[in-house]
Length: 236
Image (cartoon, rainbow, N blue to C red; front, side, top):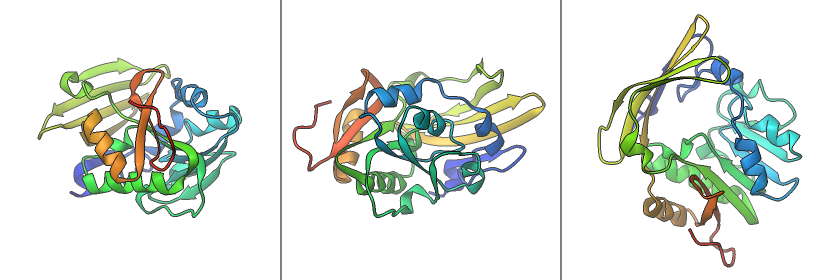
């Protein structure tokens, strides 16, 4: 399954290999994600942020006192990040030969419909998390896949976001096109994603040497995992 089939995007400015618009991402602001992560990890933790984009989450984590290494395969995205160590690399081939208190894989990256790519992402997480540390993943709650339909909303920044062309091309798969409008600029981003129910995600985590250890704040969209060798992980 090629990345073109999984994701592609259009619009003004640089578009990343997975179809994201750099100019759009540079305008986006956090929606409480940094504070949620901060509340779940030690003070001044070292964080490896995989798929950091233009720093929407990075800058807030830095302000909260964490040391952040931001990884993205787009140099145009990373050019917007200030104050963090930046690494230009695909997630699946990252090899920093060091470990971190926390590894973040957010923005639903884990829901790629490419099984081998997902497993490579999880191996990267395992290879870079310290003993006693944790991996935090963001997914859509599994039931979201049953209810999502075409929609339109306005963001806090004043942009219009539309979800169009929603389809379910196979078991546990969802395809859709996102349309973003800011002033006279318009971007599209097609994605094909896979539902990660609890049992399937647990099997994927364990295959990578990780053990599920609960959710953040009871939200099943935010999953915490620890190295399998760590003693007494919390249950789902």
